Image 1 (cartoon, rainbow, N blue to C red):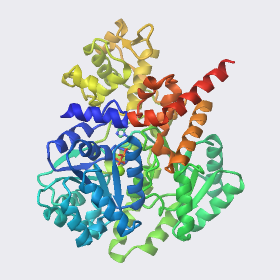
Image 2 (tube, rainbow, N blue to C red):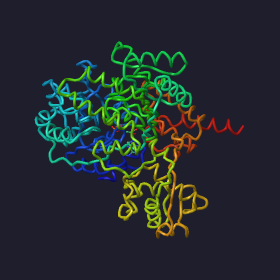
Image 3 (spheres, rainbow, N blue to C red):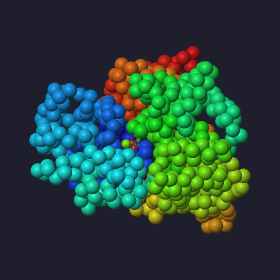
Length: 595
Ligand code: ADP
Ligand code: MG
């Protein structure tokens, strides 16, 4: 069964391996077990129910809370060649009926609906005619009133499922669940002995920076400098009040920056226009209050700047969680000034009922503690959410990077070297990392690499850190690159000194250029090709390909369709549909460089 899942992964999505947790989750769903998944934003939840949907007979009904999200997901599925539709209040009864008729004769693999639909008995009756093999509940925490986005109509899901003649597999997905919400969700959705896959909420591609500022002017100067250095990148600037949004927007647009704005006091029409333009890459930087972001699936957000202190760690983590959904790095800057605290206190007091005030104030206290923390920010957040910490330092936060002390990384180096020893140096760095992180991919399965004692031993470490250590080992002569290859490494006599504990490896953690576009000009050309296709197809550019796929193209410089299909993130349908346009652009660029 999982062979088929791998085939779907390659054919439609163009991916070579599952991300953490996906393999097990898909396997369980395919075995017909109810499943509850907590995975951070960008962790890859959609694919977990979509791949079973493709393989199951009948339809997968996806319950999703937001119209914009539904449309996005359906567009993305269609672009990959998976047949899907959505039903929501923007459609006429006729349109809805025609979709239901098509569903009845098996036209679709997935149908997305808003939970409110289930309040209509006629609609439920129509659904009962259809063979539903899976009900997937996205943003499942909405069912719990203890969660922060309670949606009463989520309570209709369980009775609806019980009214079906044959009970489908029920799966539920969320990125935010405390213990209370988790128990509530499982109960209210009526999950049967649900398989639960716990995945750390740690997002290792978020680079956490806190900048202690001298006040407003300093903050604005920081932003101006940052935007100048990141002229082609998309980002969000979160600001506490509507007035500040307007001011910053005026100032930055007067200075010719490509910006937009969003806050609760604007007309719906303007809000929608700005939101849409942001999603379509028509401007780069959104300045907004925390009203902006729910349902934004834009994958290429490269920076998130907080102009002042957020009200709690939960909101902060949710807001920065909108960055780097494509898995590439996102720089997060918290611009802090002590007067931010008084402002937040004022805002909290104005919007919180008496009985919650104490709780909100202590949450703000933790946020303030974070801003002033001198240890590892990554670990502060993990500890806050009750997750095991990674180690006493990371390589992705400004405190760890600015710390000039030498760190002893002998233990980590030993883990890596013994993995190379056990695999006899047969694999490249990316497979080594898959083994150390405990990932599942075809190579891992084929050669039983998951049976190695080093499989998954560096699960808690982030990929960048592991790569950094490998590079340190190479540069300090403890590891050789195999001649004639770029990514293969082999042990030498010095490696064994480390392995036997005769020598120690010390290093200073350094910041690295975060975005790995090796050819900015070509990247820009490919972005333009993508934008033209997207405009023609009337979908956001990231539905065509994400930034990381374009970066792969810049690196691999595909010359023909086979090369193109090999790019990570290119499936069969997209290769046929869009391949030629990109191949032509790359060819033209290469010849123009030679001549
Ligand atoms: P979530 O719903 O958990 O926030 P998504 O399902 O939207 O996350 O996926 C986030 C990103 O990760 C998407 O750009 C998706 O294409 C990518 N992704 C998902 N699974 C894989 C995989 N196995 N390999 C590479 N990229 C993946
Ligand atoms: Mg999602």
